[in-house]
Image (tube, rainbow, N blue to C red; front, top):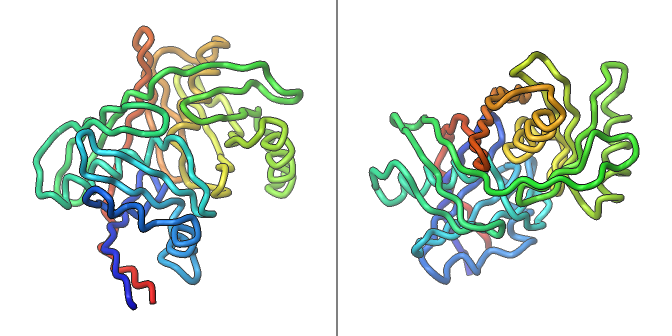
Length: 256
């Protein structure tokens, strides 16, 4: 028996996702092994993750990392999910409530054809005691360990350090950050369940919140990711992440 799932591929600053917009009950078809297969960059379609959007009220989001594990929240992916729902349903909404494992999030969108820009309030950001050799540990609905980057490090050294720190944190994304100015940071990210990514939305919020706490930046921070810039804004207790969203392709995934 052949099963066909019709997916959309989107990316936000290079952080790419496959999105399946489902009626209630359909999303249960996806398992860790199926998500891992479709996200594989050689034998599958290829993506940092699979987003399953179920058309309930509110829309629900389930995020599978490319290794098949699940995660609580994605700052770039949630924009992609909202744009995919809008396109799939021929809607014209400019905001969408999305229920995630990290809580309810509201996504604002401005679309022009296949491209657009979106923002999302990221919820509570909390800090934990720093691990030795790090700047801090931050939770943005998912866990992050932040390290001051060193230009002399090789990627192999970064990967070895990230594996060690992630294990100490019980599983976490690891950000290597550089302060580029009073309102600008640069990061590279090894994401839990994915590896190196072109951009990480929650990671951008984590490094911005930590740098703001320590007095390096103010209330609006541009975070330069390898795939593009994301903007983190602090307003009282509210933290907002903004960035681009881009449609890539429609995909038919066949499982025999």
